[in-house]
Each structure stands twice: as C-alpha cells, then as structure tokens.
Length: 451
Image 1 (cartoon, rainbow, N blue to C red):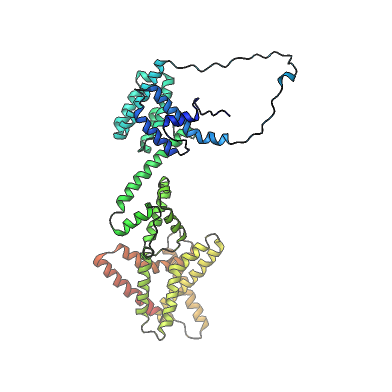
Image 2: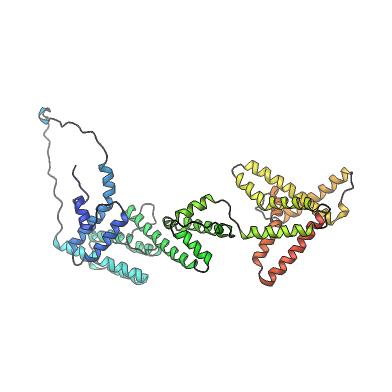
C-alpha cells in the first residue's frame, strides 16, 4: 500500500515538518504548528510556510486516513489481459495532465497576502473596531482583486481564526459580514461547514475560559467558596462529610453545574469528575429554608399545645400534617410525575384534607358554628357550608395557573412555607419583629384550631 497523505507529502514528512512524533492528538498537533509558525513566516519563507500548512492540515486528517487504511479487503487474482477477446471498438486514451505549478511571482504574492492575516487578527483582538476597519481596507486593496487570491485569503483567514484563542461570537459575526461567509444560514456560504464548526468550537472555548476566570474571582470571598472552587476545578477533590451538612452547600454546586452545562459546555471536561459523580448520586441536599421552617414549626407546636390535655398526641399529629405539606407533597409529585391520574387523585385527597384543617381552625375561632354532638344533619350542613365557603374564597384569590382541585392544597403549602418567604425579605430589627408576629399569629391558629 502506498502511504499517501494529502498534498503528496509522505507520512514521515508530515511529522518531520511539524517536529513531533506521529500522533492523533489534535492538541499536540496544534501546539507544534504554533511553535513552528513563529519561525516560519509567510513573508520571509512563503514556501516553508506552505509546507508547514500542508503538514498541519494533513496531520489533522491523519487519524481519518489511518482508519480507512485499516479496512481489510479480499485480494483478487490479476486478470490476464492477453486472454481477453479483442474489442471491435477502438478506445481512445488521454493522458492526465500534471497540475500546473504556480509561478514564483504568484507564490510570493500569496505569501505576502497570507503574511498580513496574523497582524489583522492581532489588531482585531487588541481593538475590535480598529481590526475590523483594517480588514475591510485590506479587502479593498489591489492585492485581493484577483478572485482566486481572495478565496485563498478567505479560507486562510477562517483557518487562522479557528486556531486563535480569544475569538468571541460578536467578532466572528462582524468578520463574517465583511468576508461574506453567511454563517447564519443552514448551509454557510464562502466557508466550509467543518471550518465553521472549528470557529464555533473556538468561541465556546473562549467563553469557557472567560467563565472560569469569573468563577475563580467569585469564589474567593470565604473558606466555603474556596472549597467550592477547589471541588469544581481540582480533579480528584472529594466533598468532605461535614460540607454535606452545611445548608445550601451541595445545592449551590448543583446550580453551578447546571449553569455550566446550559451555557458553557466546553468547560465540562475541566470539571472535577469525582464531584460530578457525587452530585449524581447525592439526592438529599440540606437547605436553609428547611432548617428554618423545621425549627419554626417545632417551636410553634411546642408553645401552642402546652395547655392541651394530651399534648404529645396533638404534637405528633401536627408534626405529621406539617411534614406532609412541607416535604411529603413534593416527594409524591416527583414520584408520580409520569402518572398524571395518580398525581391528580393525590392532589384531590390532599386538598380535601387541607379544607378540613381550615374548617377545623375556623370552628375553633367561631364556636357558634360548631354542630351539636349527635346532630348529624347540623354537622353535615355546617361543615359543608364552611368547606364550600372556604373553597370559593380561596378559588377567587388563587392565581389563574392553579388547577381548581389543587387550590386548597396550594393554599396550605403557602401557609406552611410563608414564614421562610417573609424572613428572606426581612432583615435586622424588621426581621425580628416579623418573626415574633408570625410566631404569635400561628400560635393562636394552632391553639384555637386544635383545642
């Protein structure tokens, strides 16, 4: 088999020009090309630069060619042409013309044109406005009025931009408008899809680097933030056991990883793989809201049931109700999200229970509506009227996106978590006053409603 790699250059010639051992690692190839490019400039050595570019492009294709060369084919015996019958028709053969070698003047002119590209890109990276103006002026120069040279300049500009770190989307759009690439079309014009993909990959790489630097500055304020940064960026770093007990610590890492996946996917290979595995396996995350509401309701229940004849029975019942609406419903919603009928039935049951709790609280305040013992007609009438009235009031006050059968359920959940929502907005003296007022109001609700 003849080892042929685009441009007529042999496999060994590719790697000798680049100065590295044969490899399929694109990063190693790009770094070798960048090192050689410093000493092989198009203006001083156009032929050397052309060889370097050919070696670079061929090296990137080498992996694909190696895959093709590994295909096993079945050898067939050669056909004996002498035994074949002579054809009655004479066949005309034409020799293939060798490619026309470009003259030294054209090669020199091309080298001069290519030599301008790095300086134009440098100018765009330093000052976008100045660099774009310089590119537009150069396109109007006499050197690029030849269509073939202009096309070569366009392709080389795309090639070098795709290898330049720091390329961002706004700059690419402006360059595209000047060069006429039309990269916003389904099929780009003036640039190959592969080259466009390389440009977009460079833009993602630039965005990932920028976000990494922002994240490094963001996580410098406290010891916990520095720990978050180390867990995110240091490969093999393990989450300490005590960090899982810090409220909102694991949740903040979940949120940061979700943001990286959504907006900066090129940064994912740099994220600590141990942390990714830990976050995927860890389903429970302690939150400040959970800590506050748990303490608030426990204190409230202990204070409001002091005068009850059987305080612990009332306390266990109240704790079960609060836990059901604070955590139980969200758990059931996750479990039944793919079973809409079961979820609807669960919401209806919880809404009926919430309506009963509200009616019980109202009867504690307004004893005149309490039915007489043994009077079933009065019980059905009073409970029915109060339940219907409560539902109508809640339904009129509820947002439009609430489903009618889940209105009492959502109202009960809001009543349970309202102390935390209020405390998040209050601070200082106002927060203390709001906490005391809420404690008194909710204590009265429990004391009168469950006596």
